Image (cartoon, one colour):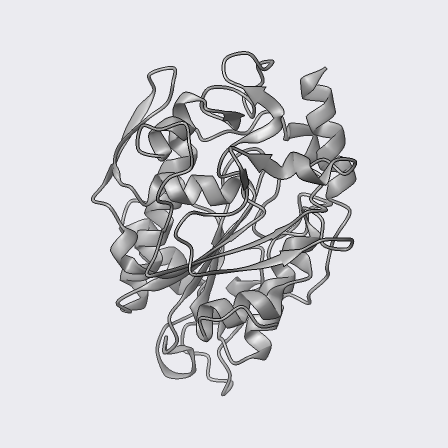
Length: 327
């Protein structure tokens, strides 16, 4: 029953999509192409130059969007790169209908002067609303997110990157940046590397379940699905206790030099629509992060679970670029 409820909530909540015109296939343009504007490969694949870099650094398993045919000339990476991390059942491009991916945010950032070589996103987990109950903070997922953030930072040559995450991506990033050995409840583990908090300038967490989901129950009494399991989002489960430094209660959760949150009291998943106060876990809205630098809070439609992402590109931009919550 719990699995069905979660899937239904995801399908109901993810009614937002946004269309952005993507570029032609990257293979049609050579590395020497000079159009006067950095070539945009769109949201369905990495630019050829970035893909080559990933292949050369042992990250050929990663998929998503970002980069172009070069990182010089018109594609020179001048701005601090932005890394987008999608949520449960979503993917980078938005093809996992009806979630929307990061097309809306990417289009807005490009309208403000960002180049394709300065905007990146990675895929992880199982895409599609029907898989919403199956995704969790698995070792392979956390590894992909960690390796991708590091790869974008190193490829760009910039000292830091900015990270914007949604839903399950919020807690996944929080786990990834800790580095070290990440271990699932089942015992599956992966060594990530050194902590990477120091290479993140601004982190924006949108609609995250930082203290778990009331719909999942309190571990170990809630029903088991991967999403609501011990390495998922059940309240006080082993994953969240570890993430919070060994405590079941909210603790220091700052990710980068600047940490912001965007959340709503109309969030169908974090709160459940008929009970706005059901957003609270241990006296805090579950999407709020302790020690954050600022927040943008909404109270009604269209700012639901997906609306918090799709309707706020200007807020995301201001948090990243201007370190404020305007928009």
